[in-house]
Image 1: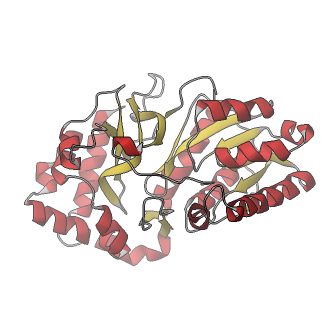
Image 2: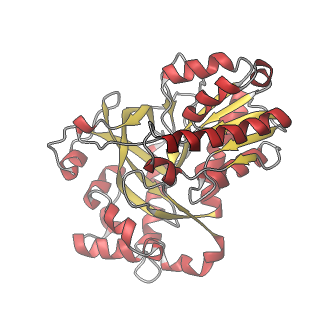
Image 3: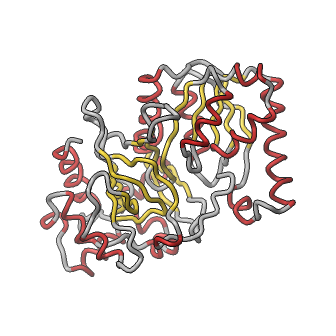
Length: 360
């Protein structure tokens, strides 16, 4: 991780969002409330603690323009607008400009795909939501970046899915409907790559013939937690596939896993200096402010906190629903930032909430 590159970007982004004339309404209000001058008081990544935790309530309830610099309002035709799935309550909207969308979702995948010799010019099957999540848009862009056509698609609504009990008839009927559509495409078309969630792939493989599973040369995981046991089970039934998994969300982008080895820890890294990860204690008796002041050391498991340094949308000290270990990238990948090992949802016993990931 090149800390100088991060701090150079940080200063540039702060000048945009805290410009008195063309800056971001929310952040200008926040600076006034805190009594700080970010362009003068913030010099290093450690100084971001001055902002305290990100106000999720404001992000859920205020107009999206309040979080975009006024100087960008005239460029709305270039905005990529997306919305979270609402797993932890009301959804949150965010904005990327077209270049930032590519940097957040496409460049990391393509970089690792080239490194891993992920297959090109093959038909993709995308099984997941096309809206309001940004992932459907990213699936199309990733396929085309590898010289493939737009994917075959089986769409589903994760918000409806999360309302159904996994033991209910409604859930089983909905899941079967998704699997039946997917199998129809697999059995009638020449599909070489599947992009879906681990839970969908685990059930789908049970219904696929050995011939169809052997024809899959690439699998991209996303959407829900991938653990080693689940990864190993899926990998055994797709003997010819190269695997790339991603950790991410609508708010910050996608961080890929380099190795694709189901027997190794799952390590995810952000590409470039636009995204900062750190981990804070899991102690449920500590406030978020106290946790920010006592971050975990690399290798310690803690709650994941991120900051996103983009021109169109600035997010500082956002507390994620996941926990994991903060790790450094390999020496040969200096352009990658500090990553997360084995991310998974917080346990309710450790200050988290019950997370129903369902199919996505």
